[in-house]
Structures are given as structure tokens and as C-alpha cells.
Image 1 (cartoon, rainbow, N blue to C red):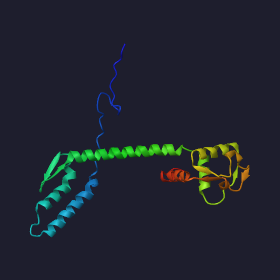
Image 2 (image 1 turned 45 degrees about the vertical axis):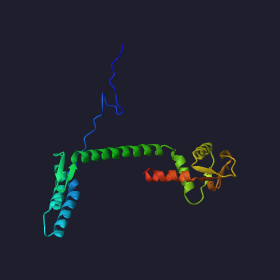
Image 3 (image 1 turned 90 degrees about the horizontal axis):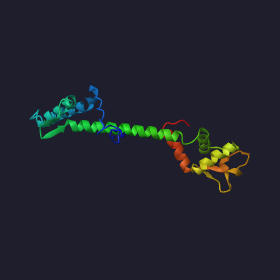
Length: 200
């Protein structure tokens, strides 16, 4: 017997458009800088036009200073000089900006997750040692060869032309950099880990 299924939109909401969470109300002090700036501009304008201390521009600036406090109560406001403020559009723009910031934060978290698990701890250590100044002592084991081979295949390190293959590394040596060097992509990877705040 056929079963009724609710239609889902791409966001997962049933039967129609998903309801967007309402934007969190801002605290009163959030509006102090723009309101204070409008008041200062009104005072400066009034002093520069001493013949008419209070004109349309002065009133408009003072009203603008109060707009954030009444934005939740009004849909729009007409100001002297033909100015019009659509509160609903301002709030929609603010909500869209907050959603975009949230999406960007989630993308950064996803990038951190992938970068942190792209290499093993020992492979990262090999890159760090190759990127640091001074000689890089090494002792060759099968696991060490496998790690270097993976770094080479990912183009994070370059193999010396004098070395036919990773398997031809000496059993041990004073400086691995004679045979293997970090590539530009390897340095970019280490720099990305630093910028994302990931441990070395």
C-alpha cells in the first residue's frame, strides 16, 4: 500500500518554505554609536547655520538618532527632506548578514576539520622539520618511507633528481634535505594550519 510522504524542500522543512529563525534583538548599547553620531552631526549642523538653529536637516538627524529605538514598532518613517527609512528592509538585510556570517563560520569549521585530518601527526612533523633551518637527521624505516612517499605523491615534498626513489634512501643520514625538500605547496599547507590555529 502506498504511503503518503510529506514533500521536503532543500532545507528539510515539510510542505513548503522553511521558517527562518528571527534575528536576536540587539541590546540598547548596540545602537549608541550610530545614534550618538547622528546627534553630533545635528549639533554641528545647527552651529554652522546659526540663523536657523533648527531646520529640516537638524530635525532629520535627531529623528535618525531615535530610529533604532522604535524600529521594532514601525514599518517605515518619513523624514524631513523626503528621506524614507524602511525598517523591514533594514531588519531583513541584518538577518541575511547574520545568516551569511553563520554559514561562513560553518565553512571555516569544515575547512579546519579537513585540514587537521589531511596528514598524520608524523607526516606533519616531517614537513615541519624539512621547513625549519638546519640539518634534518633521519633513520630510514618502512613506515618512514611510506610517509615520505605519501607526502611526495601529494606534492608537499620534492624528491632530489639524484634519488631514483624513496626506497633508495640511505639507512640513516645527517640531513634528509639532501634527498627530500619541502615544496611550495607544502609550505602553503603549513601556513594554512597556522592561520587556522591548528596545532603543529
